[in-house]
Amino acid sequence: MEKPAQTPTPDMQTNKLSDSEKRHSRELLISYIATSLVLSTLFLFISKSLYNYPVAIMACLGFLVCVQTGGKVFSNPTVRCFSLLFFFIWLPMLLSLIDAVSFEHSWHSTGPYLRFLFMGIFVISAMASRSTQQVILIGVFCLLSFWCIDAITQVLFGINFVGYPYEDRHITGMFYPKNTIAHICAGLSPIYFELVRRHYRSFRPILIMLLPLFVVILLSGRRAAWIMLALSFTGYVGFYLLVRTNVRINVKQIILLFLVLVSVLGSIVFTHDATRRRVTDTLGIFSNDYESVNKATALRLPLWQTSIRMLRDNWLNGVGPRGYRYAYSEYAPENDPWKKSGQTHPHQLYLEVMAESGLLGALGLVCFVVLFYRHLKPLISKNPSVFPWVWPVFVIAFPFNTHMAFYGSYWSSFFWLLVTLSFSASLNNDKDPV
Image (cartoon, one colour):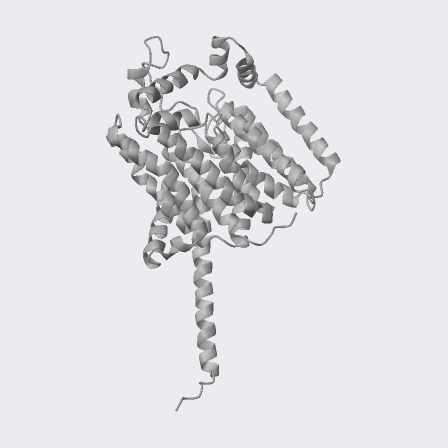
C-alpha cells in the first residue's frame, strides 16, 4: 500500500526557503568578490606588475570552479566558446616552444598564460547579472576620469596628486614612470563612452568628461593610443547612429561637443610643441619617402623588416613567444639602428604574432577574431548594450595596431580581461535603457 504524499509542513518550507536564501547569498558573495577583483585588476594596471595578484586569485578561483563542478562548467556554451578562443591563441604559443630561440623565456610566457583561461571561467561564471555590469561600468568611468584629471594636473602644474613629476614632457599620471596611461584609457574608452551616453540626457554636463580623456591621449604622443581612440570613437558613434536607430540623440548638442573637442585638441596641437612635432612627423606616413615614413612610425620600419626575416626562417611556428628580442641581433642587418640596443617586439600586432609563433599563430589569431565575431554578433543584435564591452577587443585586435607586446604579461592581462568582460556581459539578457 502506497504511503500518502507528505504534506509540506511550515518547518520544511522554512528550510527550503533557507536553502534558497543561502544559495542566493553565496551567489551574491561570489559576484561581489569577482567584481572587486576585476576592478582591482583595472586599478593596478597603474603598476608594473601588481595587477598579477588579483589575476592570479581569479585564476585560482576559476580552477576551483572546474574542480568542484567536475568539469561540468564547460557544458556552458559561453564557457566553451571562451575556452576555444583561448586555445586558438595559446596552442600556437605552445607549439612554438619546440625550437624557440630562448626556451626559458618563452616558457615563462607560455606556461603561466593558462591563468587567463581560468580567470575567464571564474568571471564568466560569477558576473552574468546586470547589476555587476553596472558596477564595472561605473568603476571604469570613475577610474578613467580620475586618471585623466590627475594626468592633466601633472601637465599643468608639473606634478600630479601623489607627487609624480612631469618629466621631459612625458605624461604618465598615476602610471609613473611608464607612459601606458594612454593605451589603457584608449582600450577602455568604449565602456567610458557608454556610461556618458546613458546619463547625458538626465545630466547634460557629463559630456564635458569626454574632454580629459581625449586631451590625455593626445598629449601622450602615443600613436598606438591615437589609433585605438579613433577606432573606439568612430566604431562606437557609428554603431549608435547607424545600428541603434531607436536612440534619441540631441544633434545640436553632439555638434557642439564635436566642435569643442576639435577646438580644444586643435589648440593643443598648435600650442604644445611635443604634440605638434609628433603630429607633423606622423603625417609623413602618407609620403613616398622611406625616411619620412620611417620617422612617422617612430623608426619601426627596420623592426618590421627584421620580423619578416625571422618569419622566413621560422615560418611555421616562429621564434617563440617573447623571443623576438633574443633573435633580433641575428636577423638585423649591420646598419640597423636597433641592432645594438635591440627591441622587445616589432610594435605591430600581426608581425609580432607571426614572428614569434609563425603562421600557426597568425591562423589562430584570425580564427579567434572570426569566432569571437560570429559568437557575439547575434547576441549584440538581441541586446545592443553588449556592444561597448565587445568593441574594445576588436580595437585591440585591429591589424594595424602598434601597441605594446601582445604576448607580454601586461598587455595580455589587459586583453584577456576585456575578452572576459565581453563574454560575461553577453550573458546578461536584461536590456539596458537606451
